[in-house]
Length: 630
Image 1 (tube, one colour):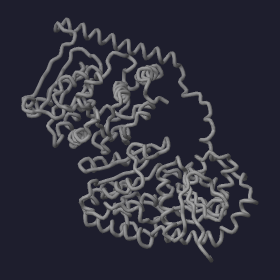
Image 2 (image 1 turned 90 degrees about the vertical axis):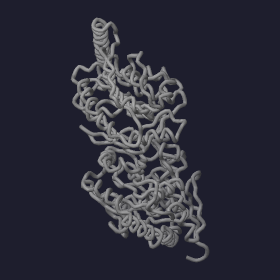
Image 3 (image 1 turned 120 degrees about the vertical axis):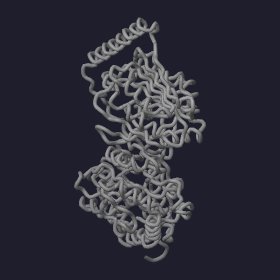
Image 4 (image 1 turned 60 degrees about the vertical axis):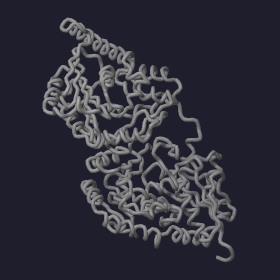
């Protein structure tokens, strides 16, 4: 090269994924560190102007840009596309559509570069490393005394959910920060739980260990795992030790030296060992930090790539754009810029029959409740007679938290639920069980538990007539003495730290009406639920927050409690209350830790709830019209 080096323009989608904007910023910083003029561009298309045009995440940039398709294809021909996606995914296929228009492409992972070359694209790997702006000032502090023991940052799918559920036993008494989100819409700084740029680096610098779990594998179980270089480098730059599943193409890093790799069968044990060995963690953190800020600095690899592009490619760009056929070959990008196809909606055969069947079932339930009410009146003189039993310990505790357990025909498991609540630590609490006239031995099981735990503050409200879940929960709230009331079904569990940490969350955030935690699915399925932050728009699409949550009793009272006067709410009492909270401008807070367990089993009242849903959803929409319904 002679004279001044060519300028670099780094293009990234203005409305795209915030992660890609971070990568674009890294490339801007690295290019500037090589001495080249460099600018970030979000509002223009690449053109032949003497600059080196790097397009970060072309699958997003060309998909989200509103220019005509032919203009986009010509811009791709004038670009050096930089791939960021895992081979085998839809995003990678879109990346390839854009890359094949240009003379040469780059990819931040050698797997991605090899996959592009297999499609006839001249693709080179650019080694990802650190840049100075990636480093948080917090990373220079004491690694041992960081506030967060374990951090996870990633999209939630079934595979990751199952792995995180398997770590619950290890994590419940540590301080975790599990930042999960869904890729069902663009992620940005407004997505609950997500952070970008300096905020993200500060989060990484506050954590001892970043857990990396791979997404569901597009190539099947035998495909080599993709090493998430971007996630690894930014963690290492902030001295956060990475524990990951085995991956391919992580060289020149060394497993065991710069990060820790473990099979899923040993993942929880490996995490425990890392948590218990501060010296080992510190040594790995320093070696990794020195590597990504030393021989792996991004400006080293990018500088060589830019020199090669200026020497071998830039002078050929104008002729290539003028003579190539940018409209040739597949181009699947731009589908989000056209009206979506008209969809017929879900296939729901026999709608009228299902509606009538549900109404008959609810009629039958109402009839049974009336019969029980009459029987209670004849036997006791009251249609709502109840027997109240308390332990001696009830009067000895001034509870901060009241746990309300609603019981109906769970004799086989309610003892486990009560035992998990009894094991709670660090908080004065009481347990209130509302037996909604179980037809099995549930009441007897509870009475036996009470007899065996006289020192605990326990109250049993045993009803002689069933009144339904909403009424049973309201009955528990009415007698609760705590400022905070924790709701739990009779077949679920809590970890010992759950009540204290949720109560602490409400103490710290006095504007929140409720707090909930991530739940570990156990039983017939392994996954996590209640894992996403408060989001009214998502809540309108479906109820993603379980009933297992802690409420300010005052907030429950202000909202009017659980609705028990509408058959459309049957089975969706929790969703109705969350929607009511959202409609009043209130909110709940997610504690990003796995503090509870949800039993997944076949057969429950949910099957009746979902027998026919259109009427119930319509009722919800009309009841809360100000919410952002889709």
